[in-house]
Amino acid sequence: MKNIIKYILLLTLFCLSLNSLAQTGEPVHFIGTDSNWFEPTNWDNGVLPDAHTDIVLTDGKIIVVDPSMAPSPIDALIIINNIDMTNATLSLMPDSTFHYNKMFLNEGSLFNSRSSEIIGDELQLNTNGSNSNLHGIVINPTTNDNRSIKITASTANIQIFLGGTIAASPGNTGIGHYANFSVDDIELNGNLVINTIYGFQPQFGDEFQIITARNSLTGQFNNMNEGDVVARLNGLNLVISYRGGDGNDVVLTTVDDNNTFVGPGSDWMEPSNWSTGEIPGQTAAIAIPAFMKLNNSSVIVGSIDMDDADFDLSDSTIKVFGWGYGKGTIHLNPSNILVNQMQMLDNQAGLSFGLGGTIPATQENVGDGYFATIDAFNIELNGQLDVFLIYDFSPSIGDVFKIIDVKNNQIGSFVNANEGDVVASFDGIDLRLSYVGGDGNDVILIAIDSGDIIFRNGFE
Image (spheres, rainbow, N blue to C red):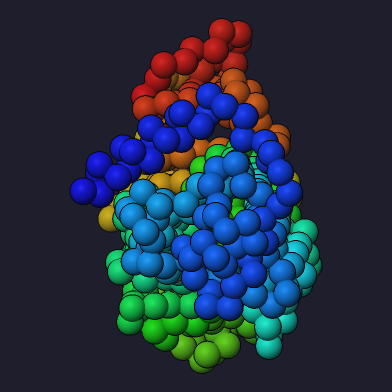
């Protein structure tokens, strides 16, 4: 039955697309007192709104869309033109389907959707909120697809509920899912609020792509900077990134408690160098604000936030879920980093790779005879690349070093190294860089004769 209804809806939308959807009369006002959207007498023209209707909601009215109250299944699938709200509340009950052209949420307005499907052309959030009045938009496991979203109010509230680890999508909302926005272009502002529902408890490493920007994302939530903890749930921290997905999506990641490297020494493995007095555990979210070194060790942590600090890894391995840093350099003296998401956030960030042999370092093998490597699911490159030799190693013509192996997505490039550039020279051997090595998106160095002027690609 649901598939038949969906087919009828799509056919209706197609037919409507053949006609102008411009408003043919005065906007329709909700005048009822029982909140029921589906009661014709609650509208000042005595008729349920349709795709030609512009709607105005004001005067503190509370309007509820409950599909069980609809006169027929087809009436439950709401299609309207524009909706303008001021000092009003519109609530969608579970399993609602709500399609509009433009929606304007002005001062004192709240749009609250529960386990529903929303499709619109343009959404503007112009209402300011506070801790005591949650004016703005609330979606709990709901899918919301728009061409454009503009949050103009600096204190508008955007509350998103997590009810599982699966992104809500058309036909799939409610228990087991989390609410999200899919949009061509979005301008962020206001305040983000995260809650859980249905007894859901996030686990370490869970990711929630709450905003997918198909084209552009500008701005950020006023109360959340890159890497901030947006909520603490089930004893874990939920950290935000505006650079997730394919590089411009808003993603929340679950990590463990924060632990900051405070010194006075520089050794990772010294407990007194950490703010908690303990070496970070496997799910810890750590901050590194000063020089640190890791020698002949293997560690696993949840996330690393590093800024204006150098990190020296010697014959060591790190496995980490997320790693972001601005100014500062990571020195890999034949070491290996295994990371889900890595971001170089500043043009003064640096990566320095030590070549001690022709075998790639792995989580099991590092040191003499190996070259430094990063194995990343996603990586955002920026800043400076450096290459050095160690353990008396000398490259030979034809050697290929896959220094960054990317499993999914690589974006950006090193500021000081373009495709095909020579990044280092050693005794008549040039190392040339390619961002399209391996299976097409890996970063490789190719050893050629210094007199060779032809870039030989296609190496793996």
